[in-house]
Image 1 (cartoon, helix red, strand yellow):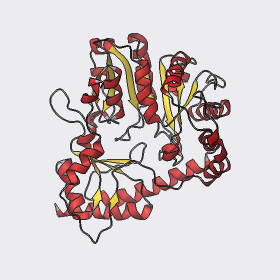
Image 2 (cartoon, one colour):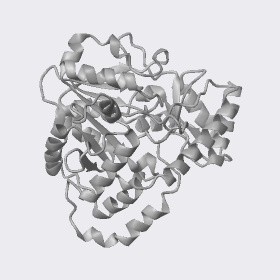
Image 3 (spheres, helix red, strand yellow):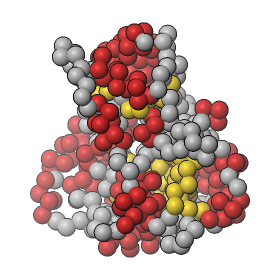
Length: 399
């Protein structure tokens, strides 16, 4: 087998299961999980209707490139959402449907990295662990960019030496960030584009939380939007990933897209043709309906806004909790070690959160950027989130 498989670490939830081993939570309390970022809001009924109406399409082989109608709906949404020059994002040249951003992010690294002993793949730290696995299996070394409170949980790109930039082939940006909810601003994205031009690397921006924000007047900016402001309408060296999982509460549909530089999309399509990544026809038709509708997305944000307001009101007297710029996570400092906090919370209150250290790798000085935080995914119902916040508060008060 590929020896690089031995470099993969257990997934965070495997570590979490080990942490909870041997712990017996109170039998009288029903378990509440804020650990996994799986949306629990109902799927849009009209999307399910399209699926039901097209079940006979299971008898048809889908193409890797997908239906032009789907790619056009995605290109139209992207153009509206990120204020792109009309017609600059071509459905035929700049768009490719993918089976969720997770598999696409991993696959893109395999296609993009030119194998060499000094190849680097940059990623935020803490992070979505797929980035790290994608680096190892592509033959690149991961280069971790600490996301610390003093920099607003955005990497300090100015601190990266020139010799590191020269070795970089691919930079993963996660904005809004998982787990921190931090959003890159326009100036930061433009700076990265300038660096990509100077050092000749690709920027791959994971923007799957972009539609979960709290101020309707200030949606998170995106990488293609920064390109558009620069007059870079070919999106050179830039690709973005978007998904219906969080935006439309459709994680099981496995539907998303990659968009950007046609000179990158074309060879990635070739890779995916061999890789076998093709979206089912009935899922493509359902996705068209989802990308063409914003009413359900507005309602989705309203529900999350209500849950964050309620949770923060309960928790703020005992924890330093703040509404993130975007995403459905509370990235919360803990009064004791984050793994001990997680285990104790489960033991006393039958409630699961995720220790930040499980999403992190050591910095040069040995510190873990994620240590001392827990990630709380506010994906449950409003009543469950309120109950969870009250249990967390009771636990903190007992320490």
